[in-house]
Length: 133
Image (tube, rainbow, N blue to C red; front, side, top):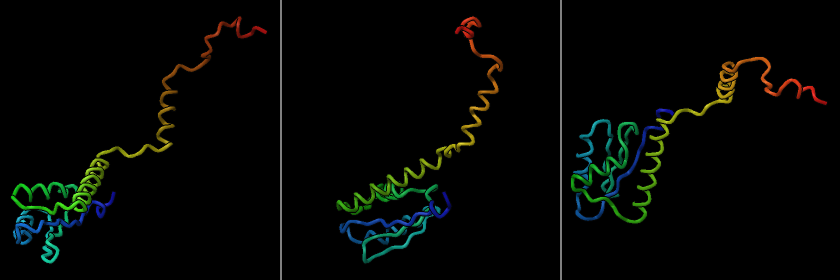
């Protein structure tokens, strides 16, 4: 996963009431390390840009809610936020997951197992039965 995949640019929407939340929320988010903020007054929103390894949208939204801000709670906003939270959580989980094994390395496992087996005649059938015709 490249560094560009980990940089996220999101929009946080605020409810109509109480009015005037955007400039205060933008100032509040600006104080967080490694978060770029751009208020969008006409949309009652704040654009944020961050590195996924340092912040998530869910964390930023929870920070704002804890400070007393009211986010937009329309169905579309809730669905969009839920999807983004899921995608970011999955990306973070996948960062910690081991890479897929290649065929070559799985063959190496069989080779190593074979090396530890005793070699020679492994047929446990009694000799008289092996030559029975």
